[in-house]
Each structure stands twice: as C-alpha cells, then as structure tokens.
Image (cartoon, rainbow, N blue to C red; front, side, top):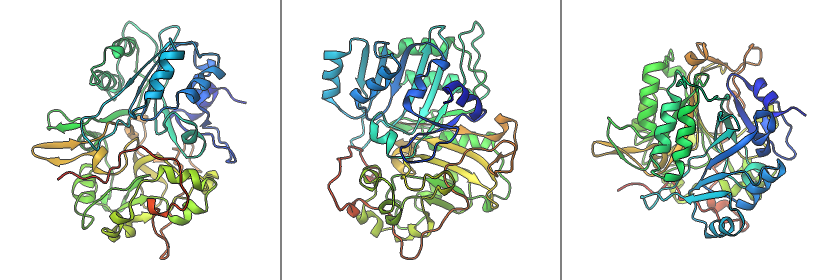
Amino acid sequence: MATMIQKLHLAAPYNIFYNTIPCVPQQDNTIFFTDLLCPSLGKLKTSLQITFKVDIEWLMNQYDQKHLRSKPLTILYGEENPELEKYVSDNLPNVKSHCVAVSDLHGSHRSKLAIFVYDDDSVRVVVSSANLYQDHWEHFNHCFWVSPLCRMSECARDSPTGFKSDLILFLKQYKLPVLGTWIDYVKRADFHDVRVFLVTSLPGCHPTERPWSLLQQMAILLDNYCDVPDQKDWPVVIQASCLGSYGENDRNWLESTLLVNLQSTAPFQIIYPSVANVEGGIFPRESVTGLRYLKAIHDKQKWLERYLWQWKADKLGRSGVISNCKTLCRISPCSTKVGWFLLTTANAARGGWGQRKYDGIYVRNHEIGVLFIPRFFDEDYFQIDDDSFQVFPIMFDLPLTKYEECDEPWTMENEQQPTQKCSYKLDFHELP
C-alpha cells in the first residue's frame, strides 16, 4: 500500500484527494483520515482542526491508530457540543477546544481546515469538505486539498497567490489567543510552492474595501487572473448538497448576484441528487442526513428544475454514494477543459456566498475554499480529457446527465424513516 507522501507525489501538482469509502473502488488519490497523519509526511509535533461538527471519540481514535493520541491538538468547531467539552476536560489534557459562535441566528461556522506542524516546524495545510465524524468519511463523497510541505525558513516567502497572507488574516479574524502560536508557525513557513488561492466568507456585512465574502473575493480573482473565451459557451457547473430559496426566477440571485460575480453570462448547471439518485444509492439512510432542501421551497421555484443535473460518477465507481462536496467550475462545451475550479465548504446559497445589503455584501456563514486558476500551474486550461498528459481530477461524470421528466430533487420530506438529526442551520432562511 502506498504511503501518503507517495500519494501526494502522484496527485501533484493539484493535490486533490477523495475519501476512501467501503465498497467503492479506490484510486491513487483516495485517502483515509489516518493518511493525513502518515509518518511519511513528517514526524507530527502538533495539529489544528477547524470544522463544524466533531465526534471527539472518533477523531481521537484516528490519532490513536497512528500512535499520536497524546500529541497537542487544537480544535475549533461550530456545532455546540457540551459532551465534547466534558470529554476533553475529563480525558484529554493535550487537547484544547473552542466552540466558534456566529452572530447571525441562521448562520453557521462551516469552515473546514487543518494545519499540521512537524518536528522541524514545517507546516502542511488541508482544506476539506468533510466534518470530523465517521459518517462523513465513510458514507459520503468528499474532496480535500493537501498543501505541499511548507518548511520553516529565514526568507519564509508567500506563495504567488498570496495564500500565506490570506491564511494569517483568516486565523487572526477568530480573535482567539489559542491561535497565536498557529499564526506564528504560518509566519515562519515558506509557502512559495503553494499554487492555489485561499478564499473565505466571514459573517457580517462587508464593504468593497474589506471583501470578506466569497462573492467579492471570487469576483476580484477571476477578473484579474482568469480569461475564459466564448463566455456564453462555458457553463458554470455547481455541485451542491443544499439548495436555497432563490426567488421567483433565475435572475433574483443566481444570475444577478452569483453568476455576475463569477464573471459569467453562460447558463449554469447544478448537480444535486434526485430522489432516484438517493434511493438507488449504497447508503440511502445515511445520505438523507447530508441533503438539505425543503419541498415547500422547491414548490415555489419549479423553474429551478431546468437547471438541475443528476449526481453521477460512474467513471470512478462513486455514483452509489451521495456527494457532500461543494465545487464550482467553468467547463468547456466539449467537456475537456476547465477554466477555473473552486473547492469550498459553501453551498450555492446566500448564507455562505453573501448577498447585497446596504453598501456591502452580507454573509451569514463562516466558509472557506481553495481556488485553482490555470495560469498559476503554467497552463492555459486544466485538461480533463483522459488522453491528456496531466489530468485535472473531477469527481463527477462529464458530460452531465440531465434530470429525466419524471425526476425530482431530493427534499427532506422524502425521508421515509427516522434518521439522525442534522444540526446544520439551513441556507434557505433569507434576509428580509
């Protein structure tokens, strides 16, 4: 079995990975959580986990499998969990934990990021779509970006994308003393080999001069660094596990706000599981806990159906497992090239991306993502044709598969059996 450093070399230069799922074929870039702790990456000194939901016993078991249970660990999480705090207090003197409060009643802390520091004070960063509990890692499709090793250095350069500076700003905005040491680790590390942009949304109203929303940051980056020819022929493909309330027609938010900021005049396509996708899956009972959409909302926006496409990943043998990835990308009409690619924690809804309010953009959720732009990989486009020398990893099948006339999107009312309660605050709560 390959070590994680071997897998990382095979995944270069994009460093995109998928989670390993029981009963699903493995690829060179599929990993277990424990792979992120593999000693081939370095001798772990301490780690930081930022997420929404944590099963602390499951998480510590992952560290225990690599004999790292006693190593210092800092956890920031969004879902209130008194049991976690008690478990840490009673059993884990090496663990510091903090629940991140979000000011908006309907907002959530959904950012998912890890920082691993090794004995030589080198740093590695992971941006993920998965929470830290077993179901997310074993019963849903997820994506991860794993950074190259950022060594401690006297010059300690930033990346050409400004990733290091943005990561420091991101950590500082928590205003938590416990993160001071982590900010110092990042400051001393050389991030020159990182080629992606870090993009974030923070709760609050953000003016133009302080663009702390995905809407604002994506608009700036795509405008400055990305050229997609024949705009109307390159659709924006959105992969989502939650659909919001978008209004009476596609012009209300999706086109007038989201697509405008993504520099697109092309039609959009949303990959969201249909009822048939879920009921025909390997884990239908578990899948419904990760899909958030109300029938009452859908009944008011039936126009959305013409933009919906099936979840299908036959090529990788992953169609039977519902995706909880959130990605956006521009794909060529021939389905062989990608103009840019975003891996994020944010669904395509106002809560995470933001919406116009007063003189700024108002955001409810705390979100994070990494943006891939071809020129920073010395490419004109990312190639996704299997015949290409270097193939950019896309999990879903291309060309996309449209909803059939009899298909309908999965909604929470489709649940036939009681399932585990999902504590996400939903994005369909809209601003007045």
